[in-house]
Length: 375
Image 1 (tube, rainbow, N blue to C red):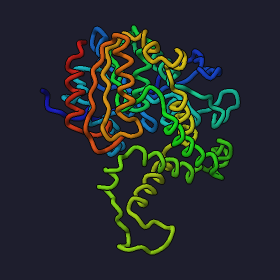
Image 2 (image 1 turned 60 degrees about the vertical axis):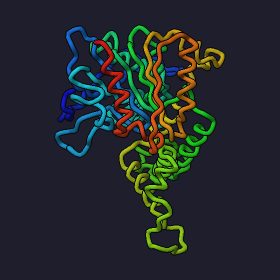
Image 3 (image 1 turned 180 degrees about the vertical axis):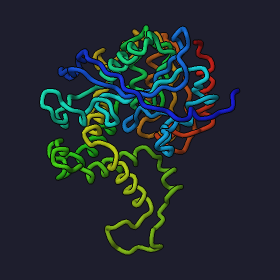
């Protein structure tokens, strides 16, 4: 095994597409761009490419760091690099920012060619299926006919699964991590509470806050606080914060008293300083809408019937937002359809965020799986 190291300094790239993209909502984008990064080298056969799909607040910056911002390390840097589980000495890895994002890909912050102003709330609704279509166009531009694997966690796992459905002949392996075949009513409810916090912020201005020189920071911070609670487990929050009081005793106020309150407010305010509220709204709605079985009478096995890829499905014991039972639904549907699937449930106390962490057993499973992919 190679000694592990970082991919080092990376530079984002921009792919531009002039042909219109038809969206599932009935609208179309007259042209768009996607920001992406690559790590490793594409082999002569162009058979070693791996696409990484990001979760709700993720981006194209999956690994490495920027020369002008060395503290900005890729969100899956612990997984991707020379000698790491997704080994860039073997694979050519691509991270891409989704349409509707706020990291440079075409989205609400972009200029609407019809008006000359930022899209804002007029940006059309996008779905997981639309993201997969746009990523397929990126693959075309890069000369990649078939991915060795598509991998993602949470919302990214939904994209990996739908790659196998939409483009079955263009993907060898689908790695679906901490994900689900569709959201539960409770999950949709959490998303709605978060959206309402944004929509009711006085600075939202119907989604056209850019023109007013403000951002709905209070609503976005509250949305992040709600979301962040669901990404952690009860045990991990209790171990980290418990009922610790900042002043050692109650001061009988509605200001920050408990350490967990301080943590959540910090996370919310930090998030509101760099993420776009319209992107948050679009992305949570895409999560809500995702249900590949809906067009097949609710039968997930039928929805996955076209898939030719081999699957690895991974869940985490304390993930209550995307519980192991949801991953087992995917596994069961694949087995009923005589598809090849491996499954691992990892014991980790960190909740949904476990998929982002360097958990030895989890990384061991991924390493073993990637090592057995032939390119």
